[in-house]
Amino acid sequence: MKNLTKPSIGFVTVILLLTQCAAPNEPTYNITEGHIKVWNAAIDQIVELSDAMPEDQYNYKPHDSVRTFAEQLIHIGGSSTVIANLYLKDIPPPQDRPERDVASMSKEEIMSFVTGQLRETGEIMAAMSDQQLMDTIQSFGGNTMTRLEGLLTVHDHLTNHKAKANLYVRIAGNKPPSYKYY
Image: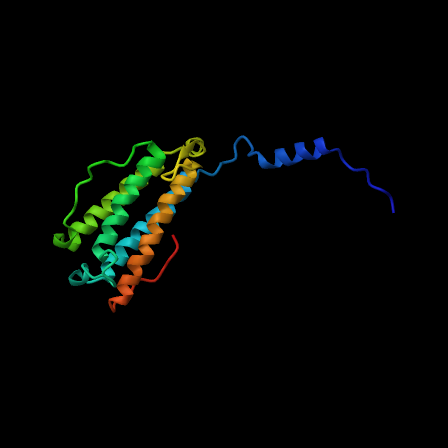
């Protein structure tokens, strides 16, 4: 068997780099466009989740130490915008956020607020270019992260509280919506 000559490391490096570059007319992937599809599906899931809980159970909470179902929804909406503003637009959380009397809000008022905030958050995300998402920032805890990691943190936070609200629906004796992908 013949010995094959080993290509130089430089040649292999050039080949690898060329295979990673998009051709001039080839479309490239846009991170925010892809993420917005998933974000909008999450908004739809929040709406379905809210519909699964009867309005007379919106003040339900499985334990005294946790938020009510309505408070979970309000937290999802309001905090999503606050976190997106901080990580994607460098706008710090407001010092004097108004307290909402969530217990006196109707299901319709709650969902109008939540969906409005989530759509606003989606607009903040959609305005980011891939280049901007690579910028580094400081997290709440002072760690360095990219804006992309901040964007993912906003979504992770929504997912965390959406899962809690889903459990509230089930524990209260209602059937939560089935999970679906976008």
